[in-house]
Amino acid sequence: MKKKKFKKIFGNSNRPRISVFRSNKEIYVQIIDDLCGTTLVSSSSKEKRFHKYKKNKTELSYEVGKLLGDRARTLNIQKLVFDKGKYLYHGRIKSLADGIREIGLKF
Image 1 (cartoon, rainbow, N blue to C red):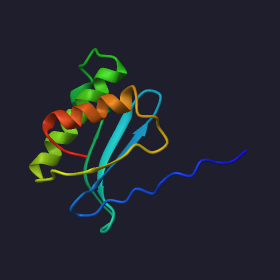
Image 2 (cartoon, rainbow, N blue to C red; image 1 turned 30 degrees about the horizontal axis):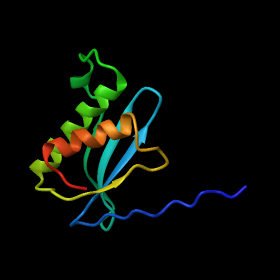
Image 3 (spheres, helix red, strand yellow; image 1 turned 45 degrees about the vertical axis):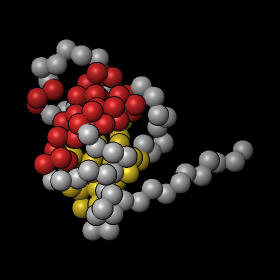
């Protein structure tokens, strides 16, 4: 059986990369500049502001995406590259992307 080859997604200072990690309970997102090797902005569902939410994981992912978009906008980041990793683009990943797009960021 052949293994799937994943395309390497690379971000730079003009278009940083959004990296997503999804566990069974939480979701973690970072905006990374791969040329410098630094994380510019990060957000996760484990932050204290999300503890009061009584929402399901998909709605919580949407809120995490909106928070990440707000933080990125304060750094004047407008264009991004979305790296969903090994996850399919539906459910929580799609909801996260919709939250980021609502703020006005493009990828």
